[in-house]
Image 1: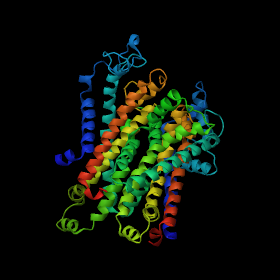
Image 2: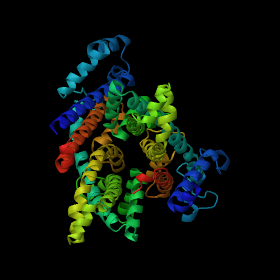
Image 3: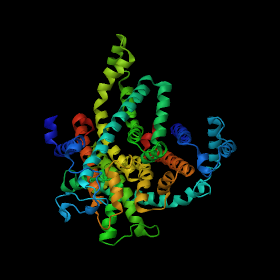
Image 4: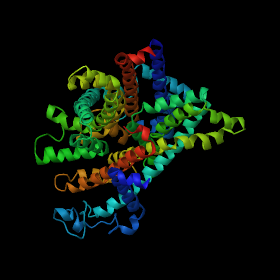
Length: 278
Length: 305
């Protein structure tokens, strides 16, 4: 695995980006230079150090004098938390439903696949907006939205794989020695399909990060007092003419993170599933 | 083929029905619309009387079928904010969104198809690397940020294009480009990998051996076969475009249904939200049904199955 990563430059870049963002998020409270909520109206709207600012605030300050670097560091926590928990919840939901549909077939399959159809006919953002509007703003709801709008891919993947292995001899063999259904799914089918699931999870994570940022931008993300990149960007928009960095910096943070996750996903796909590689 | 299409039609209808059920249930959970319709000073009795009059005391499935019946007649109730039928408010905004979505789709095809073909034909050259990097970047950039950055560059710095507005081609360009970038990137990546796969097939070697010009081989033999993949992407991306229009329209103050949706959510104007969600979802189902029909038309292999 390490050798494959070393050979793939883009994969290595992706993994490094993801690791840096992850570590930043985990250690945020230790590494922030300022309290991200602390206002300092005397020093408001300062430019970053590379655009005429001071080294006191490396990335400048916002309209309330809050330190941008600290806010970006804190913003990574929501991004990482939502991306990981959303992906895990979506994965568990999708794998369970997909396994049920594929293994039991018949009406179970029909019902679940119709739900999948309905789910797929809701545009992603629309569904997220709709749920956010109805359930209100909270971190838990954002994770819930991420899970409901992403489980379908896993369900389809698992169902398809199960359909193709269900009738294979090794499954029949386990069944003939008395293996229970749950055990067959958990120990003999899922391990066979875990690679595409991991690839799907990485690509899904990139989507969730963009979704969270979009919802925050629209004011439908996590509660307003928690700093997020999307929220910072939408606040910064009002100062676009005088202080464009307020909108530029959080956007770079989002883009680089999503890029890192996607690069990692592409590498994982090549590594885990060479037959998909074109 | 008729059997297949019949099955797909049935599936589409079930999906649409499911959507109406979900929308109805979610809005039911969302809270009591009566409290929103009456002034804050309304007494408890007045609210109770209004509830009875509006039929909110009926069993939920009775309410659902009434909702469905009314919806089939185009009656989605009144907008709390505007005081006119919700459907009317939404339909007034539809042309703006359709214009934007079509322009975005046009731009993404115009960029995606040539980029995908060139990238596949010139595989592993500098040009290919550049195209692939840009396509990857296009899938990573959040649309709202790209929109703001374009405004900064084209409107604020270069003063070439207006930041918002709805009345000219120049006003359409930035929103359409912003909305189309993700789709363009997706088409490019999909078409590239498909073209590469097809270019390694034997019939391509045959075409080359016949002495056909490279251009003819690529366009007539390879691209024609890769076209169905583009069509699939287009069908699936319609959802992305409709969803993306919510964000792009908000960024550029474009007067379409996406921006109306965000405004209505913020104003708790649930009747309008309901109409927009159902309209977008139904559009998506219908477009994908059409894509499947077209699929049969352009790909005889599916027709024969």
